[in-house]
Image 1 (tube, one colour):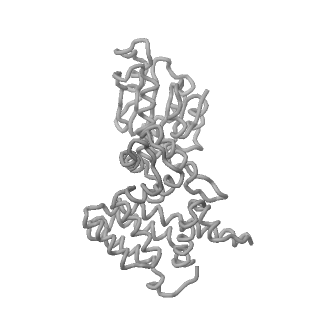
Image 2 (cartoon, helix red, strand yellow; image 1 turned 180 degrees about the horizontal axis):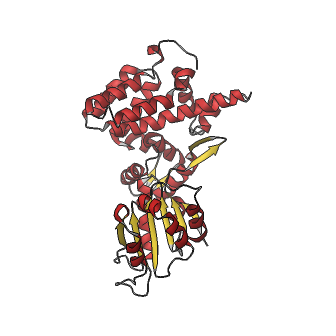
Image 3 (cartoon, rainbow, N blue to C red; image 1 turned 180 degrees about the vertical axis):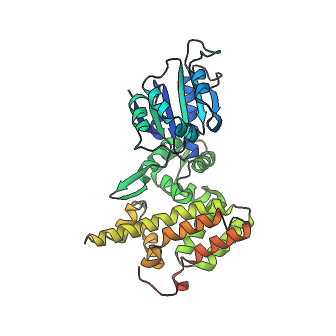
Length: 363
């Protein structure tokens, strides 16, 4: 019986019976956890290593030979053959994999680690029927044609992760605030939880107050202040905070991550409003922001976001996706040097200030 699950659910599974397992997605921390859990479930002893093969240089005969060979360390157990970075391997041997999935050898377990794994392919459907595929992406929720980060699911996972991995009790409001500050960066969230658990002491209670005081460190807090100031139209303050971070050695690409994540939510809210208007429906800013991923139980945060969206203005809010794409391409190309990267980020932040726009526009 096959299965397709998200990493959140897979990490709770006590057993795995599949002979073909695909771990896919672009979230590195979740992929790392899923691969570790697979090894624990398949191999009888933690000291028994998997057989690892690099996908770009892997040949089909070599992989099949490994799968059909009994384990030297555990002759009666299954052998785990992991093909790392297997995107090219899958493309090259897709038809062979399609034939193999339904008739996998009982000797070994094939573990494919890929980034892209399209749901509309025959191979995806076959693995879903006969094997196991584990999605390692930020969970999203569909609202019509719009996909947004599933904040409720992320909050629930964060609370559970704090309890099971860090022996800490994370409140719902604290989890929401931590997500607001860090964004859906699972590796960073895990590090922050480890630090917060130490600050929480023996009782292990992580409150919203503790997150405000210590969560994210000064760099994460300052990065948030950069975005907050830019969206409020306080350009001088935003540029000063950006300079502070860059002078401290923060990478422009690392800073662009939380900036991009925050602005994408405002862009999504704008599109939600525009779509509602085309359908002749009335939608408040608060409702649009909630659908775009803002937490409705954080009333103060919703009210702040409303003011920021109004300051940004309808026309420029509708251009956010384009501006983010331009900045991303610049940081990875023409503006990859430190000085040019600074310029690209500064230009993006200045675009947020309505006072600097050629024409004033309403929200």
